[in-house]
Image 1: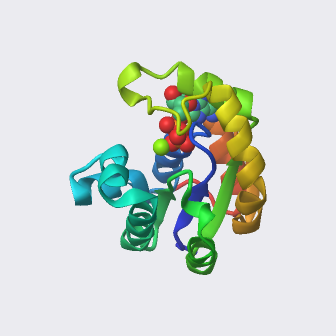
Image 2 (image 1 turned 90 degrees about the horizontal axis):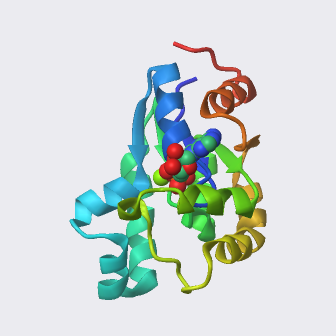
Image 3 (image 1 turned 180 degrees about the horizontal axis):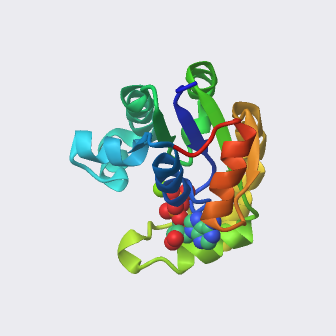
Length: 173
Ligand code: ADP
Ligand code: MG
């Protein structure tokens, strides 16, 4: 089986970190829909939203999802990719979908300890822990709905990778 593997979950759950490690373990390519979006538009998320609104951003996000989908590829998706039903269906139909699940206070801690340059302003200007709590309450059922497997993202990245390999009955390359 060399279907793409999609990693979903809120910001900070480890999609990039775990995705890179998983791709090395499998000898797969690694792609990140947020990177693809920024490279293909030469703009940041904030700029795209300012220019085209959230609807424009979401349409470009869907295009990025399709563009990076290929066999033997691990794909880290943007935190909001699951909001659109057509994105959830596309991922489920084209590959295996893994939800990296962690509570909001852990996500907030990780995001707050990132260097300033990697941080993004919160969507609402409220404290990040509060905002992550709201986001998880709003999206948990969508992540659950989209995912074939839910994996505990509070473990070390290596253990998260091992859990994913076990869930998918895949061996290290
Ligand atoms: P995402 O791509 O889902 O937003 P990242 O992979 O960028 O998440 O991780 C966000 C932050 O959390 C980074 O600073 C990263 O080093 C850290 N991190 C990611 N996964 C783990 C983990 N399993 N345990 C501890 N820290 C982690
Ligand atoms: Mg990421």
